[in-house]
Image: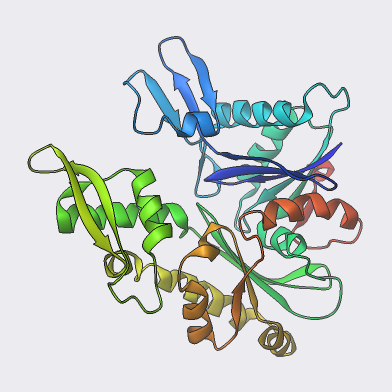
Length: 333
């Protein structure tokens, strides 16, 4: 039993080589503070967000790509693995995806959580490397492959060649920060408070960071800050652009920083092949066009950007003896 786990800030995906994605659930746990019991994990807990009494806490155990609540994270991983494994007696080998900028302490927490969940062998792989593998890229040859993985908590950018990472960076700017910016903008301009779910809906429905026109609109519901009553406002793609356009500069800067670190020959390869985009952020309207304009290199989303990292994690079992940088055999700990 070999499974790959994309332990994301927003979602946890588990994949198996022959079965593909076998689990895709939000990284959320609902906890009853009175009885100290876990009520729900995953999609069921996510539906409770913003709708629970005070004694029920809806917790996201991961923040900015790393574990922020160890006990809740361990319970969440264990539950998800039990759903996938069911009654299998053999404990699985696991490849866990981690951000490029993760520290030894943070990676150790990931390993400990996987061990507690019953893994018999654990490997760590950096998310950009997994994204390339999951998108079918050939990273074994001497040629530059560049990827930008925009998740819920971190954005990772890397150049890979000859099974190793040549240059990389990671920034704490990703989907969750964009949601927060949209919530803040709507409250300041329209005096309406909205929740995380509504902000995420607006982000994926209305975002156009390249050429917004103001013609695409949607009704957003929340609570009016002055009257305290329910309110509905019409928000356009121009509103979302004004809320987040300054933050998209972080994506552009990260890509340019990695290109500056990359040897000229590999930059030539990247110019020919283009830059692969993965993660939920790859689906933001106009982001591929914006990056193409700013870098002069064609940027394109993966065929299935949301699942590329998880698929790459399970595919990495074929390359265990070949991968160099960005891949760790945890027996070294």
